Amino acid sequence: GVGEEEDSDESDEESDSDSEDEDDTDDSDSDSEDEGFSFKPPSSEKASATVSEPKKKRQKMSTAEIDAREAALASGEADANPTTVDDFERLILASPSDSELWMKFMAYHLETTSPDEARKVAERALKRIPIEMDQERLNICMAVVALEASFGSDDEVRAAIKEAGRRCDREKVYLKAGEILSSKAQEAKAGKQKDEAVALADTHFNTKAKDVKPLVSCWLAHMKHLLLLKRSEEANELLKRASQSVPNREHVTLAQQFASLEFDFGSKERGRTIFETLISKHPKKLDLWYVLIDREVKVGSIANATALYKRVTARSNWSEKQMKGIFKRWYKFAENNGGDVEDVKKRAVAFVESRS
Image: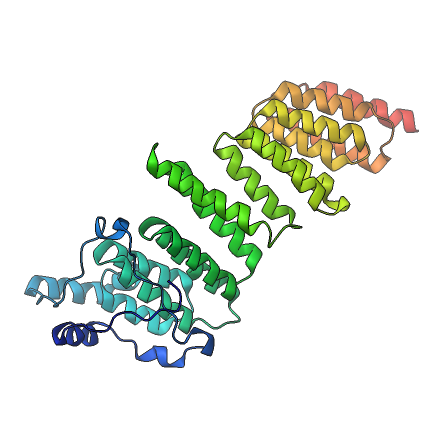
């Protein structure tokens, strides 16, 4: 779908209408990398069944509509909430590098005309936004991936991701596209639609992992996808594979963040087990204790968090500065969660006296 020319054998009437309704004169200052690029119109049934065809001729506005438009322009409402092509064109002329504005323009076409018109807007955006504005260009590319995930075929989705990887940071594209496809897989209705959405997301995570193998963030994104789909055994197997792939210095970070994912999307007990294993192997890593305590608080396990504070303050390997920090956190935690503040004070005083 990438790089193919669109059919141009439109009628004279369509050509006249397009030249009247679209102002593409600003696209002449495009980057050379974007010349000849276009997003392929959808070949699947997704698009035609969802969005109606654009009107070929602009209908004349009534007097009331003209008055309303003039009032909107005078009050600034047309700028704050653009509702016509002219509104968007005027705003884009003033802010051609604003990806949010371009994406709103795409959404406007998805609601009022067709996915193909939204694709054309994306093409224009990538020609107008400078190459050095990485985040703005990434936003547009990911909007195209989301568009294809909703209206295009699987091949068009993959082509959009490949094109995004050519234009933007590959790790960011991998992660963002994974979020989009995983979300589609979760939202899809049970049956064929669900199976196809899950297969597309799985393919993305499995095949792209070869390109980004050493990166912890990419492994974790795949694990999160599996946990969200209640495939915990596969997620745990993937953790083992990831541990063999990432550098040794990343092992603790990988396991810690996976344990946090288990708390959020999988099994809290499995998450606790992983944290306890890490703490037993690295008892002097105070941040592990803090992260586990925070996870317990987040899920409402106040008793477990309190027990962890008692355990960590009972250890003798902390410096005086570290202990003061622990007691300060514990005191604030007790205040906010109805804990025994006096007990925390007594333990803190006992610690100070033991060091004097």
